[in-house]
Structure formats: C-alpha cells, structure tokens
Image 1: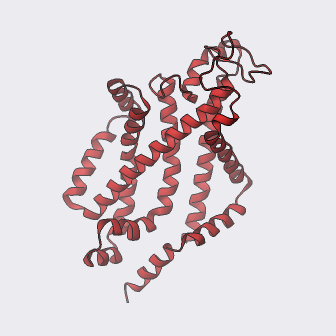
Image 2 (image 1 turned 90 degrees about the vertical axis):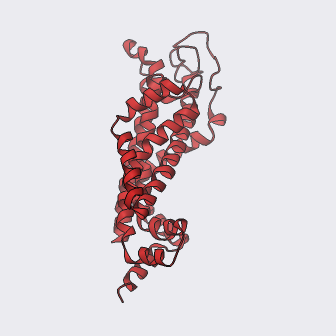
Image 3 (image 1 turned 180 degrees about the vertical axis):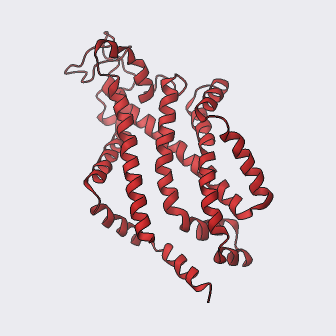
Length: 296
C-alpha cells in the first residue's frame, strides 16, 4: 500500500516522449512574447552556426582589404580588423566556433559531473566521500585562474580548451546532480530496485534521471552560459580559441583600440555575447516555471 503512490508518480514522470513534446509545444505557444523572442534569437544564432560557410560574405581568415581597420562600407559592412579581414564574416564564423565549442564543452561537463554525482549518491559511503573531497579540492581554486594556469602549461588548442573547461565545470554539475540524486536514491522504489538486483545503468536511466530531468535541463542552459562566458574571457586574454580561428572574445580584444576613435566595431561581438547569454537565461527561467507547474 505504501509503494503504490511512488509507482504511480514514477509512471507519470516517465510518460512517452510525444506527450512531453506536445506539452512543451502547447506551453511554447502560450509563452510570453519575450520568451518567444528569445527562442527566435537562439534560432538565428543556430542558423549562423550551421550555415556559417554559406552566409558569410568572405572566408574566416581571408584578407579582403590592404587597409587595416577599414571603416564600415558597402563591401565590408562592419569594416575590417587589424589584418584587413572582414569583421562581419569573422562574426558569423565566430558564432560557429564560440557556440559550438561551448556546447561540446558543456555536454562533456554534464556527462562527467552528472554521472559521478549520481553514482556517488547511489553508492554513498566511502565512494561518495572520496569523490566529493576530490571535487572540493578542484572547487577551492577560482575556475578562471585554474584554467589560465592549465592552458599556460598544456598549451592553447581546441582540444585542451574543451577538456580543461569541461573538467573544471563538471565540479559544479557534480554538486547539483549529487544533491538531487541523493533525495531520490533514498526513496522506497529505488531501494526496491536495488534489492531486485537492477544494474547501475538501469537505476540511473529509469529511477534517477526521470525524477531530476527538469532541473538538469535547466542547469544545462545556465552552465552553457557560464562556459560560453569563460571561453570568451579566455579568448579575450589570449589563451582561448587559437588564431586564426574567429572567436567573439578575441574579436573584442583585437578591435578594442577602435573605441578610442569612437568606432563601435568592438561592441558588435560584445553585444553578440551578451544577447545570447540573456536569451538563454530567459528561456531557462521560463522552462523552470512550466516544469514546476507541470510537476505541481
């Protein structure tokens, strides 16, 4: 008699995917105008990520003008940078590089930190304590300083950047996933599944994740923003995406001197960074509201 409500609750959380999609579509149609605008902004950014090579007027590193820092004109709509490369083209390619690297990095951070957090919550005991104390050591050092130190040691490459930021950011994901999974791991139906001899993978997929899915999805959006800003900051400092690849953080640094002459070109990539960050934060807040209402 005691386990029946848990079974019913669990079955309602594990509804077929089409039902979840229809509820999401219905909620999106009823969403406020600012949320729909944010979805449109994200769609434009994703379009630039996927079709950068088709919509950019020039190549990513193509020298289009012998004049550095050429003003905005009909050929180079946003002028040229310090090497005579088209700023608009590099802005479009920068969307692909900046957002693409951030998405890959955030995904790896979630796979690593989320898996370790759930495993620590399920095993508890010494496994939980050992993993948690190692994570505490990593979190004790400021992330940006730690990343700068590791990139200085191992060198600035795309692979090193992704691995270092993903490992450092996974510590935050671990803390959240562990706390959420700990509340679910002590429920009757999880203990019953363990007594039945269900595998660790089955427990994670069928018992833990369905109950913490909404918060983890929202956290993915927030983590993406933090990772995106971290990579842009590292690029601005010269240790992020290596040249000649375009990146919005490095574009701000390369064109920063133009501010002295009243040229707004450096503000374009800075605005692109701010807009995508604000848009995703609005979407995450809205998603938490509708997921909380549906659970309630």
